[in-house]
Picture 1: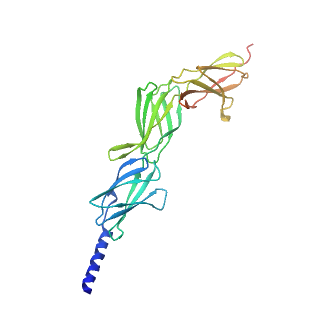
Picture 2: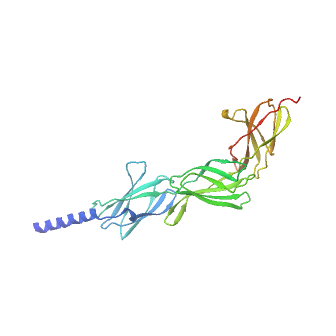
Picture 3: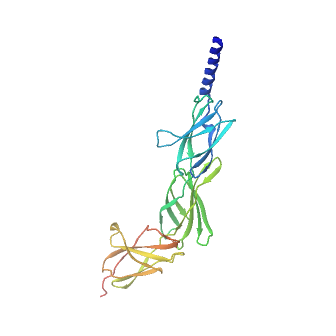
Length: 299
């Protein structure tokens, strides 16, 4: 009887060793979907595994955080995991246990992505003499790339493009003299399928090119091309650009007269075209300023 007990104990010990040594590669864990901060995973069940303890951490963190237990049955397992935040990349660790709560070999998914959040345009640069705009936006960690869908104000498609990696791009083929509506959304790929985050919208226009005409020795007229969609224009001026610009006036038409100028002084001007949508105003950027020297008295 004693010998039989020893054999049973030895067999149980061998099963435990086999469970602990059972190899499961990291490639057997894969992400199958994402929605907001929730991710879907599937993996090949380790032999003898009755359930898994699932942990997560960000790349910047040293320790894992416990998330949940998932029962294991059959050849494959699947789980939906609600992680703390969307737009982040997580490392997921799955630790198997058998019916006797003996721990097996942990496996990990090092690149688990929650859905990118809404993208906000940070700034833009444009020149009226070119047909390109440089756009900068606040990137999302989980986005591998960004999609842009550009239409005119009537809804006609102007351009559709994508960029990967960086949170800036030069968009070409956009004429001066009108506002464009831009839809931006981040995405990443699961297999051959792109998973897109929620779209955000903004309006962009090239900076108007300003020219000048004189009305008298102390007044100058500034004028620029009309910008389709603009409800008004704001004029800014400075005698020293390094010290900043001051708002001069806002006008509904594409010209403004600036009084109170001093003779033989150089002035710098730029104009913003403004478009209003709901409670929000969108404006062309300040990329370049234009200068003139005030004439002296006529002799």
